[in-house]
Length: 113
Ligand code: AMP
Ligand code: ZN
Image (cartoon, rainbow, N blue to C red; front, side):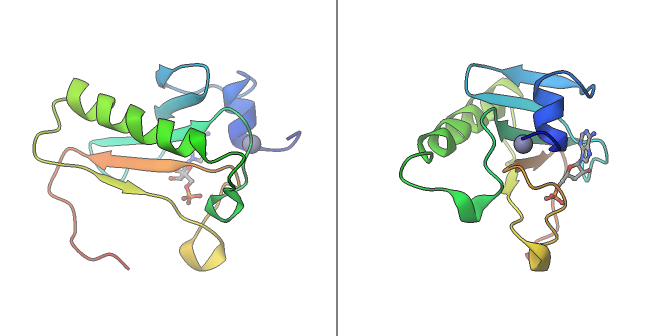
């Protein structure tokens, strides 16, 4: 995608603070952290959001959750963490490249919406 912020982060056109990378996913620090740990996990292949996950591209989602479990172990997030994806205007999605927020490092608000 030519004009996608997160595609530009993946290809290095826009700088980011990398946390983890493999052939399928890229993980970096959110620029406006909502908690002490706030990472974004994105597929390297552009998918515009959760509504565009299909049988053909969904395997990367399982992989992202494997990476989340690995990061949680590496970071020793014994007290827990939250994973969030916003899809569409009502959910406040601002970047239209599928991403999962990994939020942790303090007790989180129990309110979901
Ligand atoms: P969402 O509102 O769910 O679409 O999330 C987009 C997230 O991307 C927000 O939490 C922003 O703070 C974050 N963000 C926007 N631009 C950048 C950037 N250049 N580097 C890191 N995170 C960013
Ligand atoms: Zn993209």
